Length: 402
Image (cartoon, rainbow, N blue to C red; front, side, top):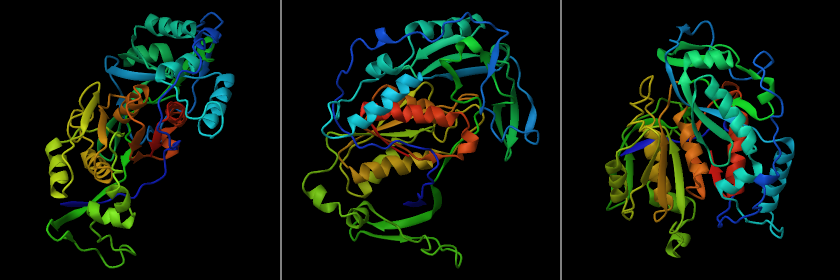
């Protein structure tokens, strides 16, 4: 048995709103009432700069030179922003949805309904698609909710269209790709096209730490750590090994479990960028006497492989966090369905973002957990996208825990 320190840093802002109800339709004609905001002819010589996209790690000290113009950039996520009026209406709707007594209390939206009410007009989306296609990009999925549009192309096409260059950077001995300067877009597109979710693959980090092995006796429920700590390393010593039954006692869950409140009928989505061996999870459940209830693995795009071995710049070793979250969410709610939602990194897009989008845009589960973080300064313009993503989750009735 392995033990982990799972202390989390509150680094990614989250809207965590407890809500478990069936989505309902709010406004069937909402999309037809959305006015186009791209009203001028696209002029390639009249540009605006998209600020906050260059990571602090993309600096001269780490720079290993420009990437090949032929390098493929798959699954880049263009951010489509709401109008100020749509944002104000959404804020009010979310507040009403979570206020008992209001007309919209717990009247959740489906992803499609959300997009029809709070996404850009079809005319605006077509204008953006036409522009990126004119520069050679392949247009992929317009995500339900209409908050992002997926495109793929090359470094050369990115530089031609967005006037930004991709370089290779070496950080702590590991290679990464990132933009070296802020991109630009035609001013005519700026009312709707906010920019990119990311233009680098600098990783966000799991917050668990491996401490060592422990023994566990199922007959006595006794767990014993097999490690020692340096003197003064921690006030608690980090020498406590917990089984699920210990957790039930500490958080007084036994009355709930004995009364049948065990997660049955609910689904929890766990987000990660590495795959797992399901046999390890099944062995965990068997060891602690939990009912057989293996997680469902949902892969968005390519399989990242165990420990992210299939990632373009090497493994991320994030399976340790995946096991921790999948096993323990299933231990606390032993009869809940666990959806393990994963995505593979691309050259400049995080598999975590792709997986989180999949969970929300597909409305997979009423509860979603993401156990990764990074300094908000390094996330840059990605912060605002995460905020809009969590807003859509709140409008769908999804509890997001980070």
